[in-house]
Amino acid sequence: MRVLLFTGKGGVGKTTVAAATAARAAAQGRKTLVISTDAAHSLGDAFGLDGGGQHTGEPIEVDTGLAVQQVDTQRRFEQTWREVQSWLVSVLDAVGVDPLEAEELTVIPGADEVLALLEVRRQVESGVYDVVIVDCAPTAETLRLLALPDAFSWYVERVFPIERRVVRTLRPMLNRVTRVPMPHDKVFDAVERLSRELSAVRQVLSDPASASVRLVLTPEAVVVAEARRTLTSLSLYGYRVDGVVANRVFPSEGADEWRSGWVSAQAYQLAEVHSSFAPLPVWLAPYLGSEPVGVPALTAVAAELYAEAPIDPLAPPAGPELVDVDRHGDEFVLSLALPLADKRAVDLVRKGDELVITVGSHRRVLALPSALRRCNVVGAALRDGRLRVRFEPDPSLWISP
Image (tube, rainbow, N blue to C red; front, side):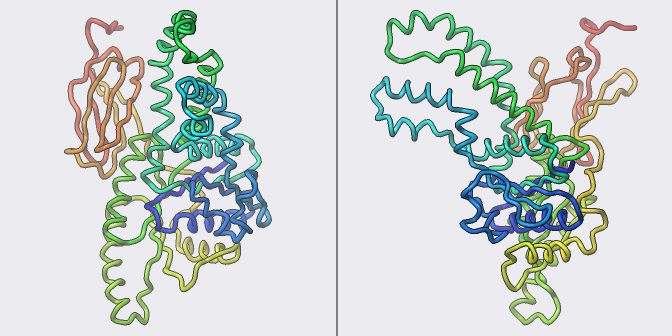
């Protein structure tokens, strides 16, 4: 099984690149599904499906061994979140909000993308496909989405049990003195179920043996800068990036004066891309004279994109562990991949059994292994794209052999 996610700044052509890669995988005999988590739902349009293929939430076979899916989030919502929404609607109704307005107010922002992730996990675990390719939302939304499983799990494990106990204790009294309904156990059960499902999604998408993210960019300064930050943030959250696609590259042959300016500017940015993202492979896709729509056109795009690929673009991800712990004499060193991170934007705090790592506006709470919980942090440094945190055993907690 191979799981490959494509993301990039809005408008760089990630949907076309994802669809082209899926077409190539199917042409090589791999049973392939390409699925969208982007609420814009342009994936069906790339394959030329009538109505964009949005009339069904199930995979549609568009060619031999190639299926396309745009998730029916309404149906998934009914299955996953209906108990919680029903309670929220009853609360709003009790305070005088119109039922139709209450229904609208209880639709969670970003629910489409979250429920699409749950569908990705379902399709991966079904075992039907050899390759599952995910056309993700633009980078900002994707980063928030991929950070959600950890954040939600932290809340459910640490805060949620306290809230549940409090509500169980106070529910009989509050039901007598207020008209606002208190949540019942099935509401809490729904939240816990969603947390378990999101944790399973994270396991699927961060599996070091099968899953990786591919960044799509155009050779422009603003786009390249965002892609650099995205690589750092994805690594912080524990998702492996396996390569970069530079899309819409102008051909240099026969360039007129206007195009020569673009060729020169792109050449400078491409040099930056190769330098910044090394040793990751960089694939180049030319600026086409027309929009590629349909399986034949997408297959042709992939053939040119991966023609000179140094590695199989569908090979399992490789590289060092994103998070690793080694022992050096009396010290332990926890090492976390943070490629291209600016040390001025990195902050590190130890809170009990957790390490809180902040890079710019992104934060990850990392649960420490049991051995490190009995140690003190004695230093940290960011070198060669890795944050290394040094620990020494706490004599009051450590039992020497």
